[in-house]
Length: 458
Image (cartoon, rainbow, N blue to C red; front, side, top):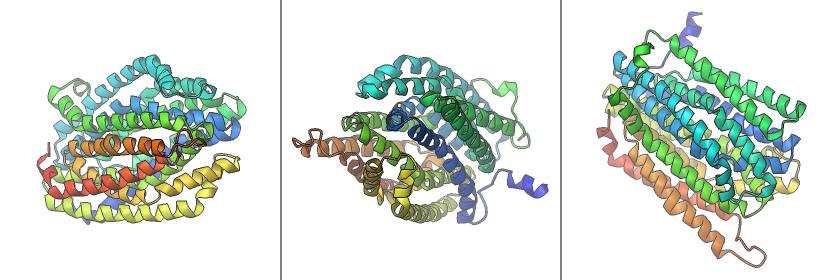
């Protein structure tokens, strides 16, 4: 029992071998991220198999709008994780307690805001994106259910971010595995048994996310040896609220800009028809799994850097950056190879249409090399964020997305137009993405080496 209890305790990353601490923290989080990815993937598989390819396209077309409207939660989560990790590393109990209380209050406010705004702008956005009439009603109802139930998504992301900042990636993993299993069961029940279509998968996701949020809250309430969760901390403290927003806003803005760019590109994607939209959904679902090691190592290095910056161990931060980036790149290369070898079998899970499987695999091949580049970007960006420099990764994302990806996508589409292909070649979507990833890795490496992130600790 004592061994099991120790397994769930927060990890102090300010001592020991950096690669070992990073790996111990990353592995459960990677498993958790795989489980998180299963939410959307299972939704897609169930609607693709039980409802049809158009329903699959509808769920995928809703993605960019969903991502755009949850940027508030992403910003709060990043700011919370950075502050929590630094105060935990610096052994500052009062500041840690106040930070967590402010995060909970900000999350509640953001949840109400999203519920109100989303119901007003969802359908106009879908029309703006030229969403085909054959799937627009499905897209709209799917999104409305997710936004009305967004509090579960919000609190899970923020509370799991706090747990990770404390070095506890195990508890968030366990709770996410429970909710993922529940999501799968409810997906099949609502769609295969009750014939609720895309509304069923949305409802299943909302219920499962709420369960994971409640479990995370109960875990935090039991961590009395590290911080205090009392009513006096559940109110706005200007200094802490400003710091959470200052640290988290760049990540939220980054996600908003990326989502806006995705919406702009989604409009181009929609112009290629339902078959390409469905293929894009399949590729993005597989892409989500390919990206998981990169995001996991990036988040682990954010916590690692935050704790060591809080303790003022800067040499240890750089050592961990080298070792963590190497592990991320190696893991990404291995997973990319597996996807290229077995990708066709993965694609066939989503659909019975051979043409759709072939198209999806050809598009996936274009992206392959880019995952290793993204390993460098996410790892070094994680180090800079953990140190408190959230602005540099934001500007790099803006430049690579707005100034590089979008113009290249539309430029290739325009230059490849023919009478047979009036909208250009559909591969432009993925070629532009690959180019932006590679350039982003180069720029991130340059800014990391300049070292200005060392002066940004809170």
